[in-house]
Image (cartoon, rainbow, N blue to C red):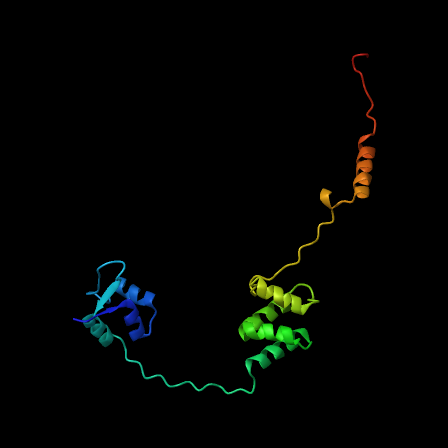
Length: 182
């Protein structure tokens, strides 16, 4: 009686290991057993033969002809960059985008297109998008800068001018009314 591990069965059927474990839990391999957590599941050969009879036979896969193209990936990256920014990429940014691949490059360029404001520095934008792992569903938004300064950002002159303004507003006299004298 031959037994196989989950990994061996997954390789035989071309399925993921979790799929094979799901099949075990659902009862497709009724004679499978587990001696310990360390050894894992053992699947009996007879269960595999029974399952193999139940599974529809697939035609042998025909090799898919790769579409021959005149462009390599670096050329596609360059064309995508030019399409979005209407400028020619520098060699440095072209090498960065070639490393991340055409799919990621297109995602970053999509983010750039969706930006609410015009991107003035595309190279810096691309570097930041790669560094912070932006994706098209999390478009960066520009937050407004605060108009007021914090105390530690003030110069000494600005601090004293601010104190004078506060003193002028608080030094207004309040008329005193003595209701006991009436």
